[in-house]
Length: 197
Image (cartoon, rainbow, N blue to C red; front, side, top):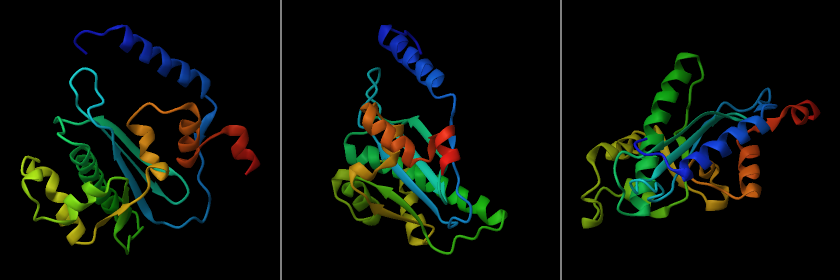
């Protein structure tokens, strides 16, 4: 960071307070859950106050809890929310392909395409329809690999409503209530709650 400000300092303090308050939280996995890999991909739009870049976030679950997640500022400035969501979905698709290979190596064959849930219908449309108008000509070709992954049935993009989008927790600040709901849907629970289950 080139010139940190009070805003950045305040954000860092909030992160440290959160870590201190959640020392006794962890991931909880149930036995005998289905071995289906599933992902959620989301993005904010121009959320960075420094350079207007968007933040991509995705999470993957295998059974009862999330085991892989990522939150990263995008390399390019997206010109629309649909483009930002498409870039995030493309990153999640690349990760899904890699995770499928890892699972295959450990004997967990994925018979069906890995579903990646996206809450933006326009982003799904861009991925499914290679013949787009001038709206998508500016999108970097590297993101279009998602189309090949869908065609080869390695992944499948599906729409979910914004309230069900658990990757939302990776992309933006949320209200305390929404944050706690999404955190529990990720499988992150307090230790004493795990013992009661």
